[in-house]
Image 1 (cartoon, one colour):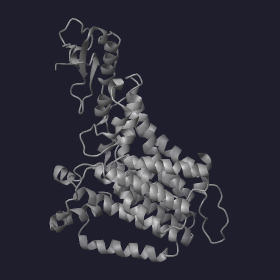
Image 2 (cartoon, rainbow, N blue to C red; image 1 turned 90 degrees about the vertical axis):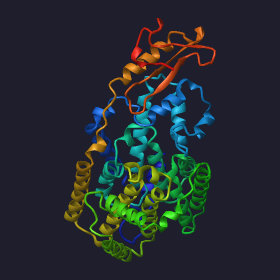
Image 3 (cartoon, helix red, strand yellow; image 1 turned 30 degrees about the horizontal axis):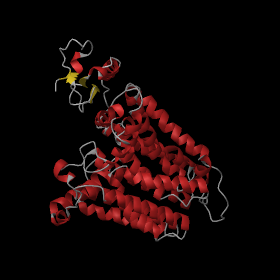
Image 4 (tube, rainbow, N blue to C red; image 1 turned 30 degrees about the vertical axis):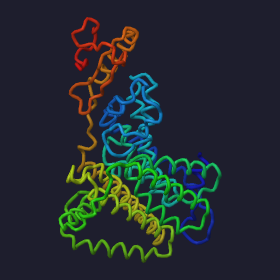
Length: 454
């Protein structure tokens, strides 16, 4: 695994045209990941250090409780959505074999690892060569690109971090070892099943397929395309509302969202869509300056495709009628890709113009200021209050598990009242011929407030 990471990290030539193998950047890459992890643990330990079952994690916990579902049930939606979240469901199925008191910790640890991986993967691609940017990039992507603490505290949100892993992996250079080939193939086979935004891999894989002569890379892109296409066919009620393109109001809202929420990080409102011409001219100028860098041009075009495409998915889907306004989760892919585009562009411009250490320091401070400003602007996204009752609820579940209710054909439904999405499990005998206990039953000697009358 480390050999594959090292090969990818050093796969591309350093600044200059001598073709020499670059010095290892693995230390800087690892330092960037460690910086992100330390900042997360230090800044949000009050939440990360307590069990949660936030958002739809409570639904997954309830669905897979008691190991009553087969492994094939991961290919069913248990969160009331028309799309699958197979990797999240797989982990929920797997963790259901553990003590219920450990399951929330496992949920959070899995979400944390996937989110850190999503924020760090681009650093090991070989596309970024500046040591300063390698140090800052995971922090920038982890705290600004992933725009909510839920990405680090929930299992269900790997539907977004998994898609980000998929998209970034498409930009990776061809693997140089058999182990790297096998690992990339497995990831590109599995990751499209993370969530609905994996549809973005289809046009990107097609574009990249026809822009590489490497047979191994072509095979990987074809695998990603086929897996993503198979996932799309499992989504129900996913017809695009193309008629909305005829609505000037929808089109205006779309471009406002791209410019205000993504390009300008929601710091202030874009004064007029006409000013978008300046953005287009800036992009054209950058492409002209770096026109000889084929790897950059290819990656930049794909990133722009993902930025505009992911926002378009919201406005052309059934979600638009449900929400009208973009939520954080609808913005995460576009915002993340925009940051990757900025970092990649800054890295290549640094290499082209040989900016000195003072220029690099100014750029680094500007990126750190962006992290601070974004956190200040969206501080509410990083304030998640842990449930004070969850631990006692799980202790109650274990208490009735040990009472042998199933042997007596008794069962009790336990839920967590006043929770945003309440976990709800049946402890004991699940058959229809059993007796369900109520809160006033003599057998109920603990946690009456958690007993649900059904």
